[in-house]
Length: 121
Image (cartoon, rainbow, N blue to C red; front, top):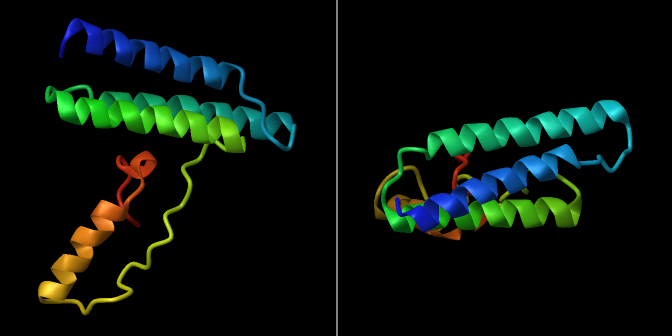
């Protein structure tokens, strides 16, 4: 990781913590606000520690883009939780064969940038 990339990642982490510190829930209930603040901080810690060992600049850039997208979406919609991806789990293909593999590949490509770090449920 270069010094510029390291600085970008650290400033992004500080930005997430600043957003969490000033976060106000839409319901304006203190309990909801605290829960959402805790979620933001825990999610940031988890994802930044999970990606701490990355050395490939392309994968680091993808993680930075995901973080920036999640910050902007969260601030815009006033919702810290990731937006759901509405792709059916096995909508078009059977459980085996080439169609299944093609369906998995298309689903992975269609995953939004702000959900790249989350596994499908």
